Image 1 (cartoon, rainbow over the protein chains, first blue to last red):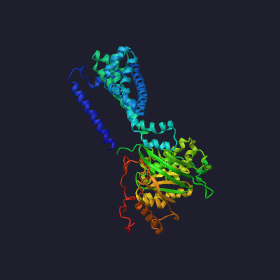
Image 2 (image 1 turned 135 degrees about the horizontal axis):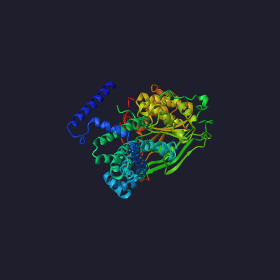
Image 3 (image 1 turned 45 degrees about the horizontal axis):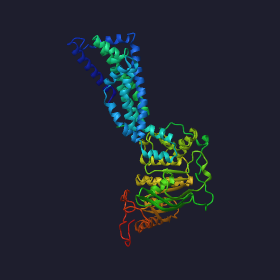
Image 4 (image 1 turned 60 degrees about the vertical axis):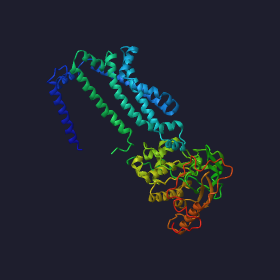
Amino acid sequence: MKLSVQVARRLLLAALVLAVWWAASSRVPSFVLPGPYAVLQAFSSLLHTPTFLQDVGATLARVGIGFFLAAAAGTALGVVMGASRALADFLEPVVAVFNTVSSAIWAVFAIIWFGLSDASTVMVVFMTTMPLMLTSVWNGTKTVDKQYVELAKSFNLSRLQILAKIYVPTVLPSFFAGARLAFGFGWRVSLVAETIGASSGIGYRLRQAADLIQSSQVFAWTILLIMFMLLIEAGVLKPLENALFRWKPSPE
Amino acid sequence: MSGQVLPSQAEAGCRIIPFADHGLKKAPPLIRLRGIGKSFGPLRVLANVDLQVQAGEITALIGSSGCGKSTLLNILAGLDTQDHGTYTLAESKNSEKAGRQRVAYMFQEDRLLPWRTVRDNVALGLEAARIEKKERLCRVYNMLKLVGLEEFAGAFPYQLSGGMRSRAALARSLVVEPEVLLLDEPFSKLDSQTRSQMHAELLNIHAVTGMTAVFVTHDVEEAVVLADKVAIFAPRPGRITEIVPVELARPRSLLDKNVTEQIRSLRGKLCFNPHPSPPPDDSAPAEGAGLHVSPLKGGITGKGCRASPGVKRESL
């Protein structure tokens, strides 16, 4: 499809959404559904709030730390479970249980254990994303081709070299897919955690806005978060994926 | 895919030299197998295999599926060990160079690592030996040139044809400059035209490098075209029943009467070999238990092997 046609379609869709939004908002009170213009105003005042950068930074740091710890622990456990069948069979139910516990429950426990602090949010992010990373990496280790290992042995590669040159490249796509999923999850649950277990950060501001029924504020934050995620997707994840996995035949 | 710096041979100071330099003609054999036996659980895969291979010789191992040829190759490669018997690889002065491997293995599948370019795939054995980058590249490019793939150094395996993948796998085995190259039906998945190209390629490389080769095949023509001698295997348990020398000048054309005659005679030996019953002592289980024995595709039995010994076959 031509680029110009694609752009035109996107613009048309955006215009339609705005029109429907505007039409709907003009028929209901603004605390139920604020109009596009009110949201735009809220958005610009949000950017000029003195605590804006602090809030975004606090949330980012919590998500980042939780995600980093989860990636490290999940990868290590996934590799161990991939290496030992017995251990994998033993631990599998625990993974299943962790995957079924709601992030809201973790948030409640986090408050009981850590109170209103950074650690609460970090814990919720960790608990939600760690099982995802573990499962992805564990599945990745199952796809290691025994024939490649045999090949490596025929060339006298050491165990460490086999790990680095055969296992790591095989597991990398699963790791990446898991990390992408986990980061998205972590980002979303961090807001849930912050609404109840923090005194700063985006989630905390969202709760303040809700308490004061400032719907336009909530909308402004939402738009900001969407923009942020799209930016990460297009600016970091996609290019990284393209660079890392050039060796895969393109799906067409 | 092009555009990378191609290190010139003179500049980096690495050239292709014969991998194996065997001065004396009547040297002791390079490979000596005596009484090799191997079992997997109750299943006897190899029984009392004797084989000697001179340096520079090309030896074919031929026989039906599941007769232990590949197991023997694994033992030669050091990927497996025999239960009985001895395997000796004669001492040699040529194995001192860094990044040199005495024995290299070319598998039935090309086993190119999909995440590595052709260049990096070929370099695998040199990375294992921690050869520094400059020499590594130089040796890799020499081998890519030898197999005619230097333009595809930067390509990924999925971008190559079957024949090119085979060449890349061959280059990867050769870059460690092996004295002995083991090949397990390496060209069996190629179409017949590409296969004969690869045969010519292999013979050319053999002439340049003087390496010793042992290959497993189902294909009588392949055995006669390539080998100096053919070891005929019988199954259950796997053993060598006869070693047939092929004393024909190279290149050997399938249009040459002497070549076709040898092929015909070898087929005869394979077909009418009165599979002697396994050696007496035998804990060997009933036929084919646990062993994958499948009818051959167009190989040995496929071509009229059911005919009774008295019938002459006209067609070849």
